[in-house]
Length: 215
Ligand code: G3P
Image (tube, rainbow, N blue to C red):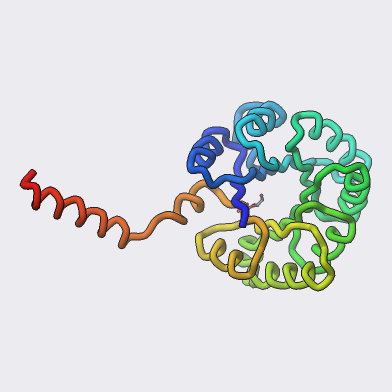
């Protein structure tokens, strides 16, 4: 399972990269808006730090404008993946970019039919937003299970990238289903290593050792 970080913060990306388990980065306009530097400058810096795929999202809503934006984004670095919203215009853009060998990430996916269409159009990644489905009392993880099954049934090569991840249980469930990638905030990556019994056990080992050695 690949781990991506879902942020546009260079500081957070450096921290996650130093953990040695970071495979890629996803950004979006909301995440970019939290940063002060221009989006393209941030993307350039991120691509320098992380050799894996870096998703950069278009903000246009019609196909031609999405394609123009994509052309600009892919000039930033070889590892840029163009993130396209899953609309009819987006579907056309994904197909056209795929035909030109440009990698895409279909974002804002909330249904199996959207996932099926973007796979048929050749998207490199599909990003179902599970946390936002949970937020409206729908089972986000069921969508992941459905998409993984559908892609397996037909041998689609589109990778299932679990997005809108809010906590470690999302990561565990996605791994059990066999999703290809999980993108998560730094906070969730850090939570994955935590266990209170590890902390308690470590504290005891250290204090026992000190007692035995009369320190
Ligand atoms: O990258 C998009 C996605 O992960 C957004 O997450 O928490 O804003 O629903 P969230």
